Image 1: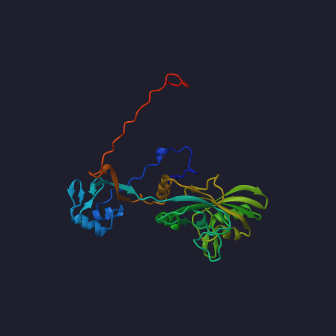
Image 2: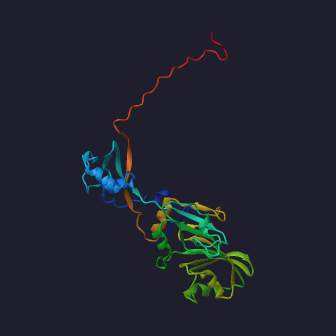
Image 3: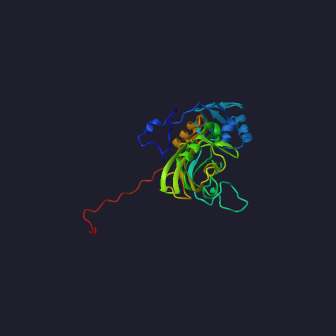
Length: 313
């Protein structure tokens, strides 16, 4: 069985940092000059094509031509400035949100109820995707990401990513009932079961259990318990795959995950490394030959007095 890596909020404290390898990927293919320069904000592609035709662009000291490409490590000069072509990895943002009850997992609600997206930080050029929905009466962990590929893989039933819930059950629960829930029962939309059930304290007739599912059908935890004649009076998600709900994260607050955490999540569902792309990094000291050198003015240094608070005559 594949060993499981967990994120920093729930990671095994004995694990070494060296176990998390930095992301490495295939070398990015060469890219056309006009596209590379336009992406860097140096002008439109048509305007840059005219500059290339006019011999204004050089690659590694040689005048460039239309259709020429550049690779990582090349040096491009234009208008008295010089850039180095570098590889950068596509970045994605991820966070854990502690959802309170009363919020819906949707971008807009016809009834005007508050949504989980109202409490998230705004981002430009991307959007938050909720990994697994929680109904309005369920609280706890909600993983938010800008990585659509990761979100789809974590929610797909074929990857069998486990979800753990803490649930308070109102009613009598016996060993036979727990055995049936683990073996499987028939619901309206097909068979369902808990992969694990652990007692977590409470009073008689009002006990807490931690249950685990390998799928995420609508209100599945509540319907499984209801099939046995008991009611879920409180439900909270505490884990989704390798992500744990931080104990100190208050209701309605969020916590950002690191790039290493994102890598663990992708590896957990069999995804490859994030793609890399080419970018331009301006080289210092190449801002044009017409730039005037800075001249430092000599400052007149005053000789310190030998004694303090004594006027010199």
